[in-house]
Image 1 (cartoon, rainbow, N blue to C red):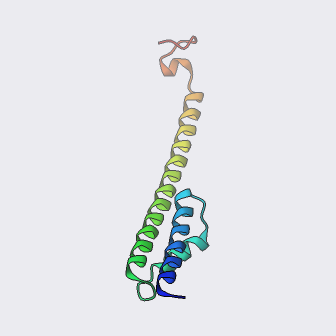
Image 2: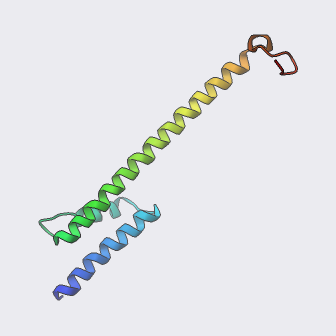
Image 3: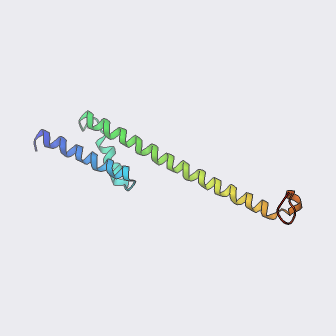
Length: 102
């Protein structure tokens, strides 16, 4: 394999991994491939820098998604608690008459 073909094959591997990550349809194997390509001592610096940057973006997106899911769960729990509390109160306790007006 000549030098140009080697580079093209490496960049195609990076391109495929990035496309899968961008689509949100990637697995652990794709992430491992990306972090493998980020090894500076093994691959050309331009390629490893790009692979590292995409890998860090992937990690940050995963962390943000986890944080958003956690916040959504917290909001759902709070909503259920508020609904439970409001459902237990009598109309007089809320300042409303039986028709629901103040």
